[in-house]
Length: 458
Image (tube, rainbow, N blue to C red; front, side, top):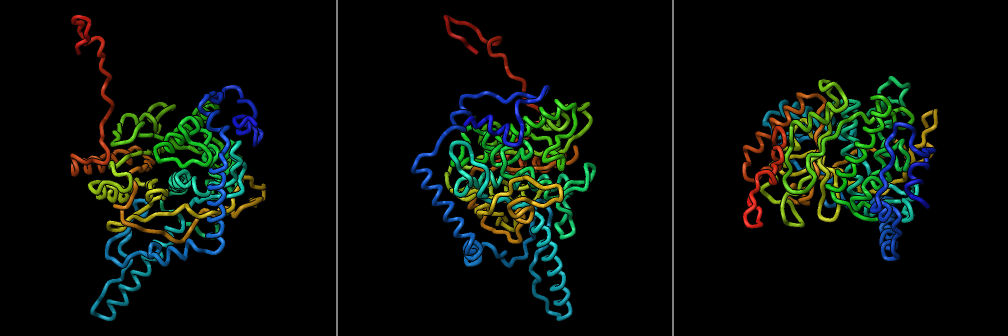
């Protein structure tokens, strides 16, 4: 089977329409996309699927979390931060006066309910099974290898929820399953349709499309991918969608049967690991690209970093900065992980991070929704939410991370740069990120060189 043609025709998309960019023809993509799995790989992945199915059926993941204590927030007076929003301590504390103690208990209960409602409104993306086969690998689930992609989808989904519905939106039972019309704001289910496990362009941020766009970067079915490779694949998806938007005369990118738009700009702040540099001019250019230079389009900033040489844990000198980044109002989380498994970090409390774990296997949602709004399979939008959060010490994070920031307006970007600049000044020798207004012009070494006895001196 021609996997590239299959990706374009699965939903009836044939050859590109006039004005649309043609798909890049890359030999390396063919190598990865048409790669079959060895018997050893197929056995390993089959065992992973069986294990996660068994764990999900008997609820062992939740039981393990409860027993280990990672699903129970510690009793502390430290405030909590969830996607940059601050919540005072959920601990009611000790009061000498009985009436004062009752008031403190009531306030603690209100804070706990507010935090729980906010947490229950954050997107949770997990392993899925039963989706369209991933090319010649014939894989129909991503158990045991797709956790980084799922963590990245969580960051993107939560960013889109904030973008389309606002940070104060909360999930309640009264929301319709699909938008009432083209002008109606998208529902949560409309947003999640962008991530449905389907190779068509109606779900541009699906597992299938991430693998397709990341094929030339070494992303392949059955292989674990790091945060940096994921960010590169996401940038390719955004670049492709932006080209389609321009081909349609600047109209919004209507996907998923015109129910939702991927109307974000993306600035990937680094092309390599280590400590990246954020250039304000490039961020502004991305957010105003294709307009008159004054129209701002909301901006997502992805910053892949490698914070330490230790292959197991992040360098301790970066821990305070990671915690500060999670406290910024523009934060939409971090794609990170423990050694060997990826997680989505969406908050912090004290020196601990709060995270959602993608290592749960659920039925796939195909993305095909009937006009009445009913899903034809899968668990629908409800499967993209959870009511529990895990925590662990920030110092136990793997050093390979991807930071995410959302700037709805230009002033949000300026405020973010000011906060990151203050962080850099506080940690001048171990800054998590460097800042600059614009890149320095490249030097013309040939013009500045001198030929001395056949040697070039610069």
